[in-house]
Length: 404
Ligand SMILES: Nc1ncnc2c1ncn2[C@@H]1O[C@H](COP(=O)(O)OP(=O)(O)O)[C@@H](O)[C@H]1O
Ligand SMILES: [Mg+2]
Image (cartoon, rainbow, N blue to C red; front, side, top):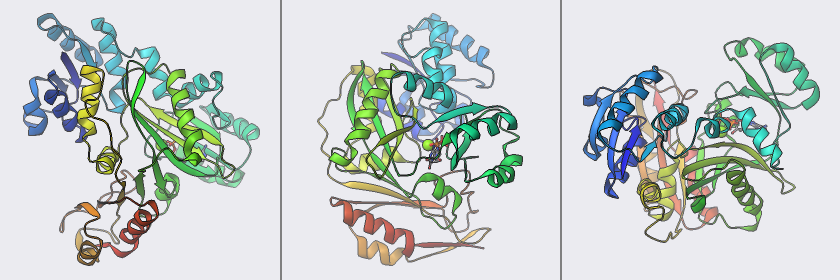
């Protein structure tokens, strides 16, 4: 199978998806906006050819793809990075290749279109409107009531997302909305937040996973002291989560999703009701695929490739652990000076700490508002959920990174 893969070298996890494709026997041709020399070796080694393009000029990407397809029969066009989903669909349509079309992709990118598709399928979404002006926002708030959420229509990573508890909150955030063309206004849904992630082939779910966000991402994004956790659950089949899992399968049907990775987020209210959050036709970011791999000692990069190339997974999945990524933010500004508590944690939590990737001493402190990983990540796993959360919370409180 000949696969045209958009952006094989960036973001970093793409290198593993490309590696997976080559391992399962695909011939992978890369199109990316990095210079060939900048493509990480793992991806470079998995590619039979690489063409540098400019993703900001879609016509030239389509032209390059068309030129390639005159030499080699292209069977699939793949992209697992959110900003390139529409472009991948345009390339497919230009080349006449099966797979998601632009019309099918738009509801995965535009949060209002997404909820309209799901509303007509009878799925419980938060009460929602979209607006392009302050007037539109006030009108929507009148109908939605308080508390409410205001967020970009095609946002990511909780950036520019606000909870508003009354008109004075709206006045306060109004200036920060000016650069956003269109926003979603939603009823604020109180509850815990979970994911429902899948790998599908031919419209069937071959693999699924549920992660628990601790705390809710918006809380993590507004409180710098929080060490945000993403916990891949060993048992996603407990009764409490059944409503979300069932909703997840209905959402995939309603969105007519057939092949590849999906990442859905949903809310579980205290009365047990599941409410839809959002869905992407791509894997979860924020190193979540790594957490899922640690939960089952599996290689889901390769599993995705198997599903894509062969339509099935070669091995049954055995969930052994709860696995959680704990993201750290340094205290202080400037450069990383020291870690406190790391040696003790490594000694005491052994063998449950399975990965430690901290921003190195001397490096500049990273912007925690712009990216989830912040100043590093520790992955902890344990078969027992309660113990796993205790160990993760210890990494949250007992490990500190200092910058100055
Ligand atoms: N309607 C809502 N009710 C409660 N919290 C919300 C709502 N919409 C968004 N949030 C909070 O904001 C976060 C980011 O919103 P989300 O829709 O997931 O956008 P993205 O992750 O693409 O930035 C969510 O994880 C949640 O914590
Ligand atoms: Mg989200």
